[in-house]
Length: 327
Image (cartoon, rainbow, N blue to C red; front, side, top):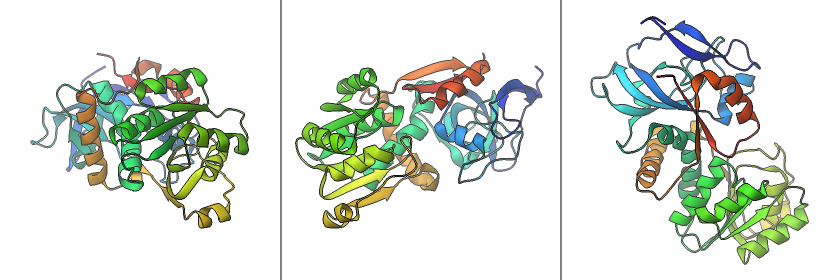
């Protein structure tokens, strides 16, 4: 490798997995900074973009995937020069899964000195989705009964911990893997419900029993049958926030339940949330993580292993996968 090249993951055509190879190192244009990447999180959205099916559009191939990372600014803004930052690539062809990335200087946020780079990368997309959904979208209140669907994944695990920080009265964690689900009790869940193979009616009864009454808040990154059951188990004026569809893109909702109980159903999407809102959420998360109030299970992998990490991400791993460039 020379001073003008770097190693990176590259998507050569939509629908293909990334290949790891040497390419030309990017340079920062006006308004950008050049970041030497120390850690890059792998997210479901990265796979959706590479599939060509992302609603927000896709870069022209070939491109470097990776929507977020942590690294040190080496060129560009004097204010940020030499600082360690969390950054977003905002759909750029210069993604985070590389040794270097050229990103908008307005997409960089300095991170606390004591926060490990891998943790800072892992907390971004997943953490902001959970934080904004519970704090801003449904405004979870102290003492309320909350159901965290998808609790075995990184977003759901963070949702459990955030609900505990907010003072929820009863937290029910629901997911498909009973072994991983049991670990959510250590994160703050009061009860767990295994959802694999259950009917809507069975899940409704289990959700209500585990919550000790009708649900008041539902955190839903899964949609599908689990969401149908959660609505049936919801009480008057319950609030539901949806931020994903890992259990299916369609769900049959009862108009009588939605109208009769005056439910509020709101969607969340990080890209459609203001940068100020995302930045504030990350600052809160980073502070809690630095103080040990929030933790996220991170598995660090060398960037050359990006193809196998990509395949694992497609199967919804229970830990956050973070790719680390070779020293």
